[in-house]
Image 1 (cartoon, rainbow, N blue to C red):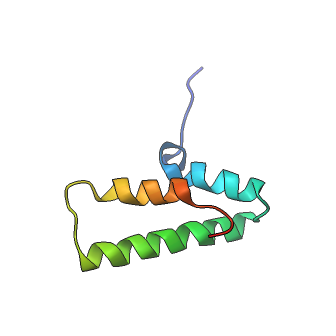
Image 2 (cartoon, one colour):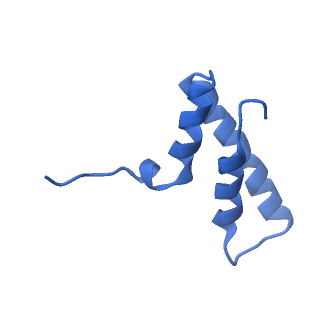
Length: 69
């Protein structure tokens, strides 16, 4: 049996959404919170581009994301 995986399962985005939903956010709000992290990351990247490994900072921010934030 071959297991297929979607791209979302290969990135920290899905791993960030699940705990947010377990803490009480609905799917829409969890996705919106992740979107805000992405917006902040993109804004920071535009101000001070880091082309060496830009995704590492974004993925780290997703791992720190909580409902309180």
